[in-house]
Length: 135
Image (tube, rainbow, N blue to C red; front, side, top):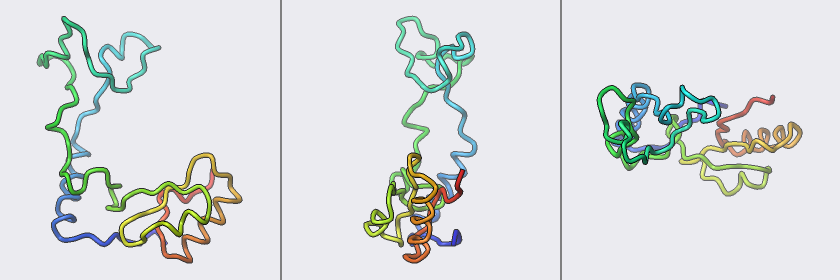
């Protein structure tokens, strides 16, 4: 079931491989002074302060999100497996998916009974489900 592969060109396969290897090496972008205040959290926020050392890209500060960290355009936004993700909330949503290029991601609000129905229908239509396990 999970061994379904997307239909990609050779160039896309090569770029996807590069995108995935770059993503593994990419640093973790963290909010400025995330370590100082617990309430801030570490999710990324652009540093905008007038005297911000991080905004000025000083060497002793963590890196800032820039265009240079982006992946190749043709594979940007794809799941590491190569599929484009499509959100699914009920079994009828699966009929709108192209199994060659898209994979289903079951919404977090879907219960276990409907999740099972979605899984059965996906197997029937030969569609890959990116988050199949039931919690």
